[in-house]
Length: 433
Image (tube, rainbow, N blue to C red; front, side):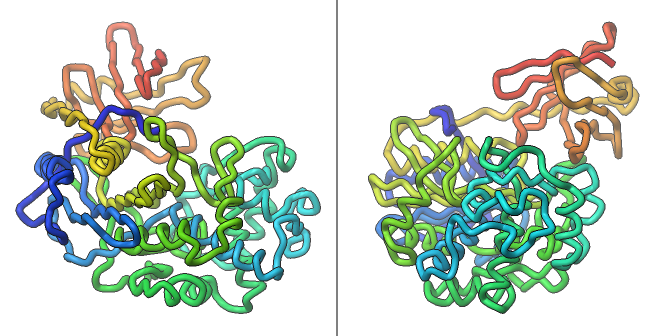
C-alpha cells in the first residue's frame, strides 16, 4: 500500500526535464533533485494525463542518455496478460483452457487454467525464488530446459486454493503465446502492442547485444557497481521487456482507455482476488485505487499505475535504488493530486574500521523467522544474506546499526549478547548468533 508519508528526490546537474514545469510539480522536481544529490536513486519518471505526457524527468548521479531505455521487470506481466486477453477476445483461447492442452507433463496440468496462471493461483512453484536461480539466470534457456525445470520444481498447493506470486506461470503464458501465434514472443509483442501504439522503444531486450540507449543497472556496495545481467530467455513475458517511462505510460493509458482491449475485458482484468487481477495489481492511495504493476530485475525497479478519477498514469523506472521506491511513488501521486507530502531525511553514513565491522559476522537465527541470516563482510562492506536469497549490502548509520534503505531493513547488533534485531515494515525480530 502507498502510505501517506513521503519523498524527496534527487538531482544532479545532468538531470533533464522534458516538459515545462507545471507549478504543482515544482516540489516533485525538488524531491528528485535531492534524491540525485544524495545518490539514493537514478531513473526516469513520467506522468501521463488524458493520453499526453504532462511531466517527465530523468534524475540520477551518473551520466546517462537523455532517451534512456530501462528493463521494466514484472511490469512486463501486464503486456503478457494483454496479449493473452487479445486471444481470448478473438476466441483463440479461453480463460478456462487447461494447461494440459499445451504442457500435459506438468503437475496438476489438467486442473490449472489460463486464468490461474494469470492470477498466480496455479500452485506452480516460482522458479525465481529457488536457491539455484542465480546459478543460471544469466544463461540462455530454451523451451525444453524451462519445461524440464518446471516439471522438476513441481507444485506447492492445489490450483485456485491460494495466491502465490509465480513467475513460472507467466513464462508458461509466454510459451503458450508462441505456440498459438507460431512466432517468437519478441515478435508477438511488436505486432500486438508496440507497432499499433507507435512504441518504438518497447521490445524484448537482448542481453547479448544491448542497444545504444539501454542503461545497465547498479547496486550499492562500497560504491555503486554494475549488477548482474539476466538473460531475456529466462523471464520472457514475466520480466524481459525494455521500455521508457513515457512509453510505459502511453501503454497503460491506452489499455485503460479502450485502445487495446474492449472495456469489459479490461474490467475483468481489474477484478482482483487477494489483491491481484488478470495481470494487474490493485494499489490504494488514500481513498483512491490504481491499477498497474511493479517490477524488478537485477537492480532495475519499476512502478506504473493508472488512476481512473484523473485518467492519469504515473511511471517510475529506476536502474539504481538505495531507498524505498514507495517514497518516490508517494511524491508522484501527491503531486498529481496536489497534496502536501514530507521530504524524507536520509541518515548520513559513518565509516567503521574493518575490525569493527567483522565482529558482527556470523549466522543468526530466530525460531519465528523462516530464514536464517548470514552476516559477512566483503570489500569492507557488511552484507546480509537470507536463506535462498541474494545478499544485500548495508551501511552503518550509528555504532552497531546498519541499514539498507532500498529494502527498508535495519540491523541493530548487540555484540555482548550475541544478538541482532532485524527491523522491517514496522516489525522486529531478535536473532541469535
